[in-house]
Image (cartoon, rainbow, N blue to C red; front, side):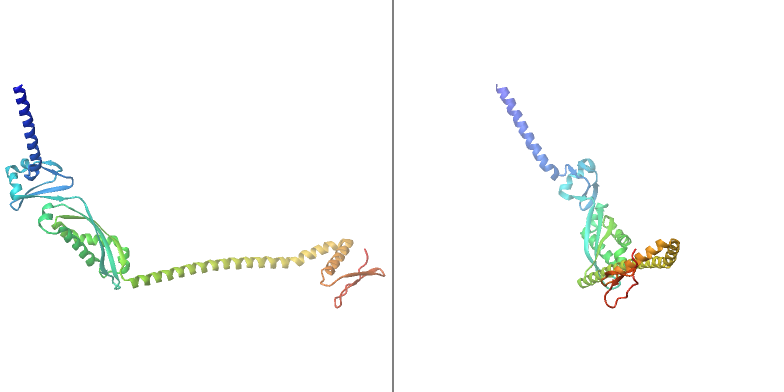
Length: 307
């Protein structure tokens, strides 16, 4: 029993010591630079006595002793490890003031992206590389876009964006940056009075265009109406010119039938009499015809013979 108790006691003590050692190793390992986990899109730069001794670019678990040898034990005391992110950064600068050739104050918004391609230059050649890059982009915008014509500022954004990128790229390379896409996204007026004046001119121009379109439509409709009236009057004139000939031929044919012609003329006389504005009174027959009594002043037609 004493042997078993001694064995289990020793085993428990060993496990306890191992747990304590593992805990200390987990805590002190990163502090003593025994290992390091490198994230994705990150470069770790190691310095010793103020000099760069190497950098690690591959993500995953990294053992400095395997890479740098025994001097890796000096990193916690006389060196330092810098983590530099190499992922893509995007930034937007708003309302960069430029003046057009016409003297209009314009606000330019420029968007650009960059990433670190030289971690050593990024760390030690400039104390504030991000701020310096933004200031350099703002300066390039003012330099390339000032005193340009207003229509060029508003329309040729692709060409102007390329000029800005060409201006900034050499300096950004010295600071460890690689400048990616650069684009002028916004060009706006800064003077409120000018904005109001442009709005007023645009509204007036829209009104003029609307009125011109309306007038053009009315003119087209008037032309169509006049053309229709012209064609109608021509047709009526042609019909009036043909009417006597048609009526003459019909009457000539009727003259060949005297009874029919006489009945037709009598019917026409009665119709004309009935259409007169006055009153028609039939009187008793005198002789062989009828006497029509008409209002005063109306012409008296010849007596009608009874049928």
